[in-house]
Length: 83
Image (tube, rainbow, N blue to C red; front, side, top):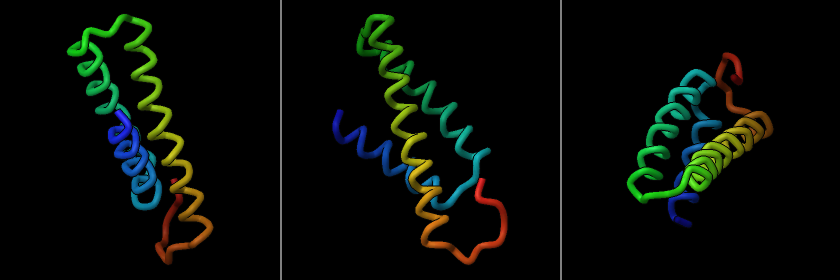
């Protein structure tokens, strides 16, 4: 599970550096489906499944925010909006 959390954090951070909000929403939708399928396949209770989904979403969104901050601080020379 630790490797999965690190992978989710990396995806969120890179997404914050490179892509916009609409693509993040697509990633979060796919992550929701993957998290629910994972919870069902492992036989988690409802509470465990909810916590699994919330944990995965929180990691990706938090690291996306950190990626946005890094992009703003270190400044890329790209024109356009940050979000």
